Amino acid sequence: MTRRVCVADPEEDYRTGLAKMRNTNCRHLPLVRDGKPIGMVSMRDLLDHQLSECRFDVQMLEKYITS
Image 1 (tube, rainbow, N blue to C red):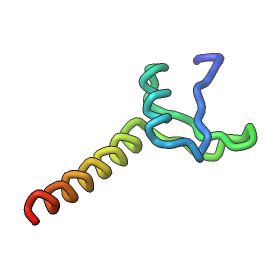
Image 2 (tube, rainbow, N blue to C red; image 1 turned 120 degrees about the horizontal axis):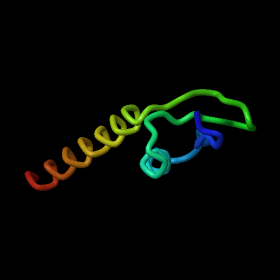
Image 3 (cartoon, helix red, strand yellow; image 1 turned 30 degrees about the vertical axis):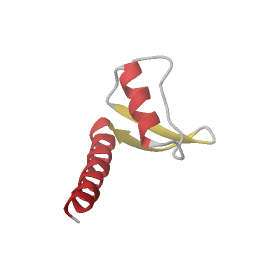
Image 4 (cartoon, one colour; image 1 turned 90 degrees about the horizontal axis):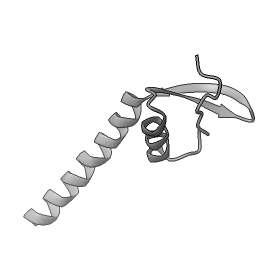
């Protein structure tokens, strides 16, 4: 186990969480508020959110192009 666990604040942007996970080569990130663990997010959770945003952007661009 690692001694210094990389954690995230629940108010942080998902992009920050992804960057932390990439930089530390981990797939799960504990969410900590006031020094207490309140949850856990996985790389898949964050990538799903990013994919959802990308799909929305594509839909808006398609509407713009076709109108």
